[in-house]
Amino acid sequence: MKNIGIKISLYLNYFVFAILLNSVGIVILKSQKNYGVDEVQASILEAFKDMPIAIVSFFIASFLPRIGYKKAMLAGLALVTLACISMYFGNSFDNAKILFATVGVSFALIKVSVYSLIGTVTETKKEHNALMSSIEGFFMVGIALAYFLFPAFNNEKDPNSWLNVYWLLAGLSFLSFLFLLFIKFEETETAAGVNLKDDFLQMFKLMAKLLTIIFVVSVFLFVMIEQGILSWLPTFNTKVLHLPENISIMMASILAVSLAVGRLIAGIVTKKINWIWVLSFCIICAMLLVTFVLPKTVGLEVKNIDTLSDIPLIGFAFPLIGLFIAPIYPLLNSIVLSALPKNLQSSMTGLIVIFSALGGTLGSRITGWLFKNEGPEKAFYFTLIPMTLLLISFFILKKITAKDEI
Image 1 (spheres, rainbow, N blue to C red):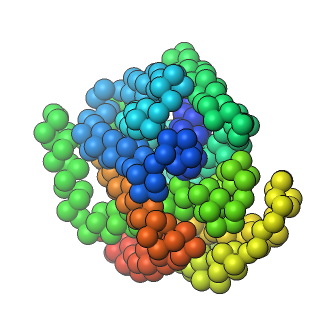
Image 2 (image 1 turned 45 degrees about the horizontal axis):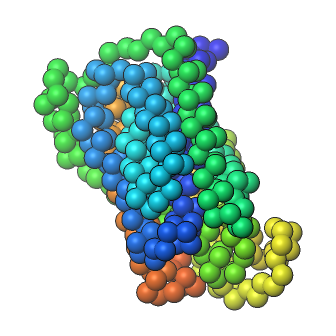
């Protein structure tokens, strides 16, 4: 049970931020209804979430070991606790921007710390892969919970009722803060260089490697797909399937649950099957769902929907794409991080977070533009483009890693 307290803390922190980060799709939907903004304006919330993640990660990733992972995570949890309370009292689109900007800054501190600490509390590549997949799977459980938490507080007769959920989220953040504060936390010195300038140079040296370039492009493409679908599925359910608001949000939870299940299964499957075949199978299945299942979902005639059980089975099919895209992100990260020396993992994690944030922002913005200009019925078909590029990147990455160029 070595490092059990630290591992529990990693799970708790990731769980809290899963709910906060991925509530952006719900808040996009509420912003259109409550604050009178259109799809393109609402999609800016993704940028307010992701750009601070990218900027903060760039400046602190390699330097964070000097600050201390525990201090960094405590700061992140304190900030989001205050931001949730501020959202309740502010109740405006501008406050939603502030909330997600704060969540973005805090998550940069949390994610770089969590990914770096995984390397310090595991001893083998298999342990690293298992812990990475399970933490990312638990992250998806938090995402799924968000799709039930917000409807639980939402009363369509009272447009402000949904804001009460932020008291609960503030409480969860504060409890995570207290747990982390009181656990024993021994950190080793893992800084890459001898000063801040040297730390930045270390990150840029990593960027110069072909492996890193292909890897971060793959991460960018995946997050573009995942966040584009996650953030806009509630709106798709409302405008295309014409579902009531609360049911639209709960329907989106199927995607999050399938992502969680897919990542947990991947941790088992990859112990027996080479990662390249797992990822290739997954992305091809995802492309087939978009090509053949999505058209039937778009053409679905839905009437008198009061509960999830009233929805025809085909309506549940497209969100199952999560089962197939789920393994991609943790496996890509683990493949590269577990192959690096521990003193370089913080720098590489910074690059992962930066390009994940950029991919999420661009994915949501493009999807928002497509929803407005091409129509919500056609928007998700465009995910086939990054999926095809991602499939190609897998084989390039496999070829490079086979040469031991890490």
